[in-house]
Length: 325
Image 1 (cartoon, rainbow, N blue to C red):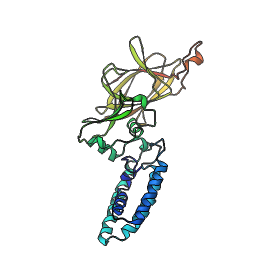
Image 2: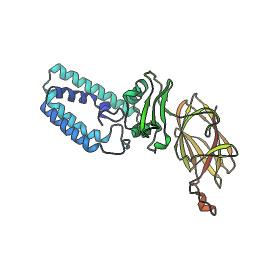
Image 3: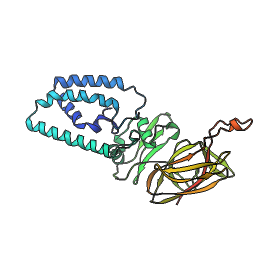
Image 4: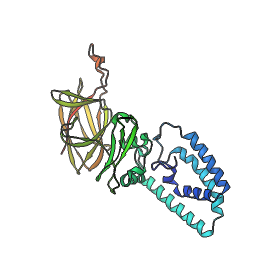
């Protein structure tokens, strides 16, 4: 709540935190009492279990702390020299203005599951300096509030290479971070799982991740495929603009109209039958893209329509032979 680079106070009101620390060293009584109350409130709020809880940028509990920060700085700032007061006021106005402008101009509804520009910069430059609770890192790397323990290891990289990885220690079974070396890159961070050619459903080496709705890998007649319900999402990295993606789709039990969205833009719509159909679409921009498969018909549970079947998985579309050109 204080120093997290995504939603902590240090990202949004750093000047107030600096003044509080300065005033404590100067033994300002009002500041000391405000700080004691601040830490009591922090202890009360700290047991929360969901750190990426849909807030708009700053953690909502951190917002409650700002009045205490202001009260803690009032008496101290009012007694400093005139020019010191002017400099502090200018710094506060400029930094707060820049933070506000950045937040408003870059606003997205999913900001609670994406890394802030400051967090991206630190992870790219010196990843060992930022080691948040595992949930914060994993959900922001995956881009959604989803179960992440079955998606380990989770790595994020830039064009220089892998910056940070969350994995499970094979000995202790505890989660831990593996950090890349110090390196500078202005390229954006992305979640990455590198699949080799003919691994999983991919026909060539691919950087992708299965996010929501994907069932386990299955094989029939030497063909790898995955079932999904009426909606499934994946993250796909393309190395060039206008990358052409081809994929085979087939419906379970009955045909349905299906759509494919990339970054919320519909790029394909058509009827998918129970026989595999080759579908192609073009992704305009290189980089990390969110691909969504949608079927107009609801998923079907095999045991509901097939006698003696014990299969209770929701099935809609089988996806296979995924390639990018």
